Length: 379
Image 1: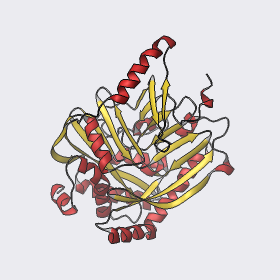
Image 2 (image 1 turned 90 degrees about the vertical axis):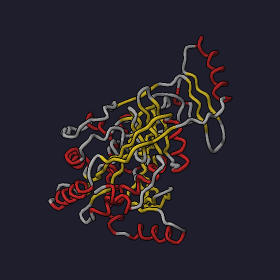
Image 3 (image 1 turned 90 degrees about the horizontal axis):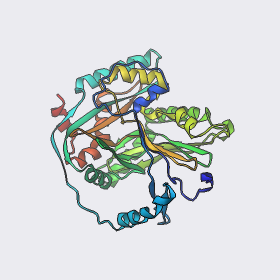
Image 4 (image 1 turned 180 degrees about the vertical axis):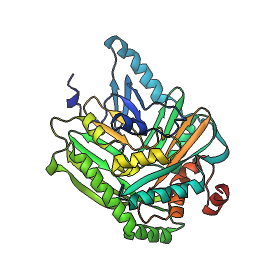
């Protein structure tokens, strides 16, 4: 069958899964300092035999069967049962205090060390992160549903394996490919949401007028243009959306969109390799920043800032960046959040930016924190 002719749905079947941040080690030669305490796979993909693809705009539901002919009749009962299944209210409980994988004083010191590397001319910007953990029991799907209620994002995803789950409310696309049209949608620049509409408007304007945020964003857009240019026709790469604001439940972001037309001799794997991992979650230049991240972050990132998505049999792909994501494994739930460190970064401000980014996820745990509360916990 010629799958490329099936273009009425972006995804018609094919491998679905994730690539961990450390999947980048298979692309670049990186040092090894951080502890791999989660011990999750760098690559995890499944090939579903039954696919239900729901078009939210047209309300159409497409069903794709990828089985031997004699097995196909059995699938229709499976589809019927799936569609008629009532939504059961699952339960979950998150307990214990919130713990970080590094102390605040270490975070502030690390920011200062990154700034030294910037002043030395080694890098321009580095994304530095911290990870939070609490105890968990119950159904991870219930926690995901709560997360989607609190922080709906355009690139949400839920992946359940036998021994771990990924619950993502990601706002960011790493890369997509649809009929040779490639695009990436970088996010760089963040403010918390305001307490009311007036403060929200003030913070939005403040974000767009902030020279540091603008310079950081443009630098990362240029990085993504360069990455796309490795596999796309040079004259086709363009920025079709530049520095627009997107508002989410707890933060405001500056977002751009970069697109291009893939060379005929290149395919989806070449495209993903050219962009992975995303420049917005490493920094610029990418490899040097990844080396600094490995040196300063005490634990391997695992799925965080990797990508979750699909390879469709019709040649399309779509992968998010695994930010605003909860990792559930071995009776624990983990949240990780980072900040882009540049030459004039204020360590204290960058520290609390990571807290702001994590707030919606904390809320799904049943907690949120004001700065003064977090100050007491982190000293």
